[in-house]
Length: 130
Image (cartoon, rainbow, N blue to C red; front, side):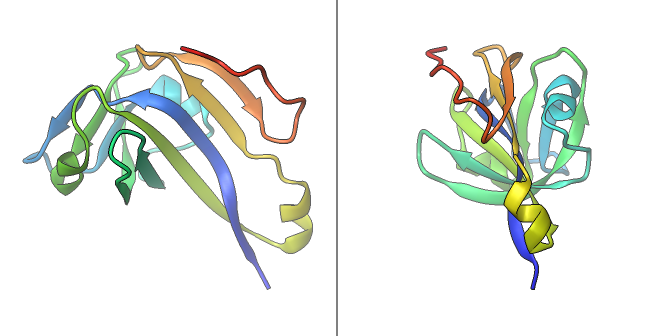
């Protein structure tokens, strides 16, 4: 048996652009992608904290340091510029690995810079009010 677990997430990212006619998915600042141990073309689940929408898509590399979080194509209809989203990746693991794996969490500030980075299961971080 294998288990499908949270690998990493970017929490509190702010949507900066939405382009219904762009061929693609979610364009992310590569600083956020790297900080969350994600890679371009990786499948992600996105949750919109403002309206509850959930969807799956893939990462497109955005300009490093730009703060871009752009929804492209059909998913552009699921969030408005300024909405707060969570971007998550998952991994398929053997049960023994899954029991000890600690997902990586990146908290973004309002400009989509890395405000905090930690592993779930470590000492509980202070709650942030960004």
